[in-house]
Length: 166
Image 1 (cartoon, rainbow, N blue to C red):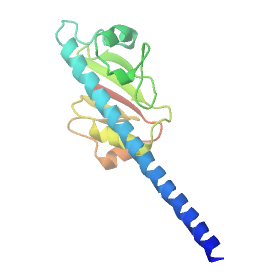
Image 2: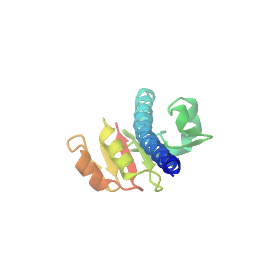
Image 3: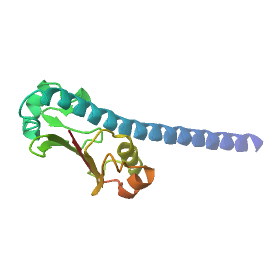
Image 4: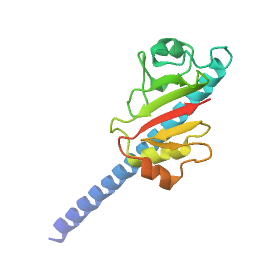
């Protein structure tokens, strides 16, 4: 009888250990996606600034309609490119445009109930160097940066982001 109980306890402990590994892996993957979003968007901003500010048109041609040409120009990181469509690490379509008489670029991403509220907070608090960052209708600025509390109030699992940069 002791042998059977020992085996049952061993099986239960093994299953608990596997569940723990699964939770750790899920949390790591979740954090990686948020980090990828921040890295990708920052790279798009850097590339767009370096290539668009050289011309006299500002960000006039920074539009989703020009995705193919912008892919060729190297504006987007390779992991964001799906044919002629640009996607975020959650799989949502990324749209781009210009604002303020083409003196600013705009990047919209997220939504689709694809990210977690925790990932949303991580992205909102890690993006920097923007004119405005709208998270689900809440607007942040360089003088009103999101902190964990204000970002959590704005974030949901279907949160959309609209980042405007200059």
